[in-house]
Length: 142
Image 1: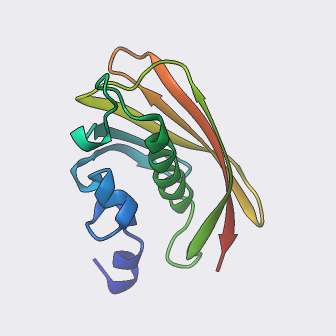
Image 2 (image 1 turned 180 degrees about the horizontal axis):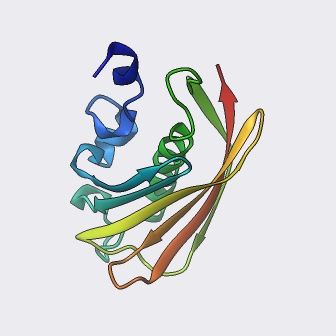
């Protein structure tokens, strides 16, 4: 792996990113990664549970933010690098509780504009039930 391709590794799969460490993202398994699409098998850490043993509502956005960023980064390569982004809008719809021990996350680029990128994130269980749907607008910066 070259030095420049090493820089393109997703930040959330390596220790050292506060949000990624909170979600224990280095333990996730990337099932599929292609331009504009990411599918991840994630686990549900016990410290993120509410008293009913479900993902506490406030942490959904952290998962969404990380998956959105990772998904947007799949559109870039060594010549066209994605340096940084800011989340300018996020909407989350909750359909059913996210229960552990594992669940699936899917990120998909809906629109890649000049200055922004719109990403959809879906949480599902292993029976195919849609649990959460989110849409995020990222502002691209160089």
